[in-house]
Length: 122
Image (tube, rainbow, N blue to C red; front, side, top):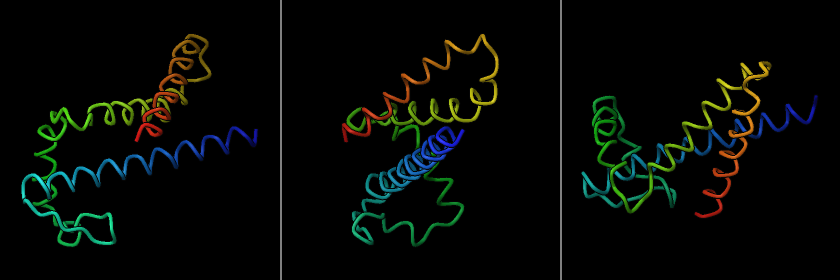
């Protein structure tokens, strides 16, 4: 029905925004910790975005495990939320018509609530 489509669209929009924010934080982490550059543009974007090229993107990706291990930021929780949201939105929705998946889908609702709590915690 119409409300389901609205909810699905909002859920996809939230996932996209949350994922983009996660990636920008990764770029900013690399810029601050590896390059020791604290400059920003537009008040919140890392300056490194203006000079992004593929070898630098690879370097940032390789620094990702170090970024996740940083216990002060709880980024592993953000990554878990994104992974659960992707699994919920793209895999479980495609098999939602199966009766065996009803319990798992209810659990995914709990993960959506966890995502909302994490957002409100920031």
